[in-house]
Length: 115
Image 1: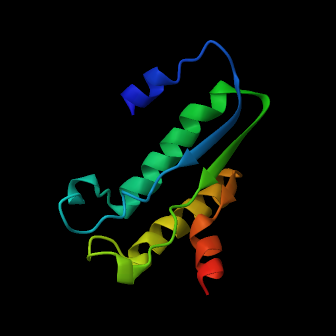
Image 2 (image 1 turned 45 degrees about the vertical axis):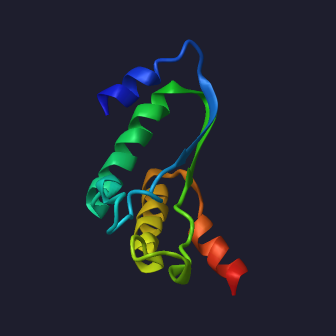
């Protein structure tokens, strides 16, 4: 988080910030599994990011959290599953509710579209 904090030292206040994390964090196996972040670490990191961003917002600035998108299991090679990714999406939605931040639930929206 120190690098992230340093990168966000703007000369201006942000009026809108989108935070879209979790798609790679939910990787379970395969060559990219080094990108995996345990669910609780994901939740804690996302909360830390919100707490870093909030003081940098303009007076009426807003944050939008975006959940990771759904996974079509039949098109993956076992590295990710929709079930696992859904847990990250739910954690994002729950954090948005707790922190009073708007959430775009791409996971649910894409599932609804695919049905």
